Image (cartoon, rainbow, N blue to C red):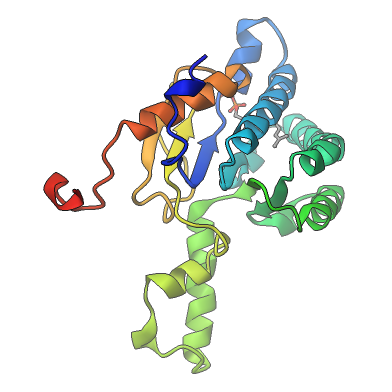
Length: 245
Ligand code: FPP
């Protein structure tokens, strides 16, 4: 048990996770990729509940990237139906654990039933005050930044925002994550050490944590381990160590 090692006063406010390795997990066991995604959905449940237990304010999970649309059609269909099933199944548990659900990404590109299911769970959990779970689905950071630039440019053109007023706050307000604080801790599983177009703007000062565990293996202990590692780091935000004390 590694729970005692966690300092409850310095928890990260916003944890984001790149859930990677479902396919490899399945392959290692001689199973088809879909089984890996199903096991991945169970790891999602465990991780969300572990975060809720710790009262982590925001948890953002990379469930499907804009690039994932290039996967074989059959895998996309399975992932979408797994998403719908999970949302339906988890609503009760989310309510029990006081979890609020949001979704970010090019949500209009999702099949209608996925959009409907998402809208419903978002609505039904909107008043929950515990951990705020955000699913990044059909999400790409460059697309997110591009659409922010388009929106801001239109407002400049229509004299709603003077160009000299554009600052980081205004940019934040036009991102999908306008309601979220910056990421404090970014976790990626499966041994890959890259960001893959996830929350590029929001991770500017995040602590990065990479683990060799494949996503279906990730559990409460793994989350605790990542938080313990985060708490050992000194976050300087560009300052010197001396200035922090
Ligand atoms: C990466 O593994 C995982 C995904 C592309 C999908 C993530 C989906 C889930 C965890 C399941 C459902 C989600 C929710 C929110 C219920 P990969 O397939 O890229 O693995 P590989 O790199 O080993 O092939």
